[in-house]
Length: 73
Image (cartoon, rainbow, N blue to C red):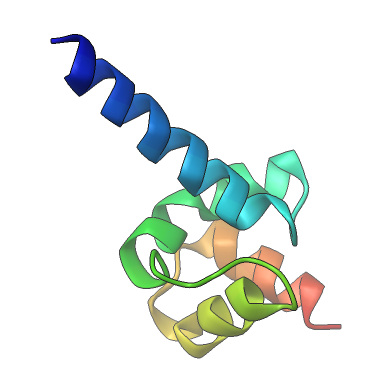
């Protein structure tokens, strides 16, 4: 049981840190589900997460699409 909880914690921390480098906390919250769905294997940094989300723009949630549009300006 402890291993399962630890694994869940690690996954959560990895997802948060993966999108943390390019987005604020509010932006991360808006895009967390879209990141998990479309860009989970994308290494953070250098704008890679934003580029990945941008490629999926049409399929993003409204909130995340607004973040991507604002970041692209």
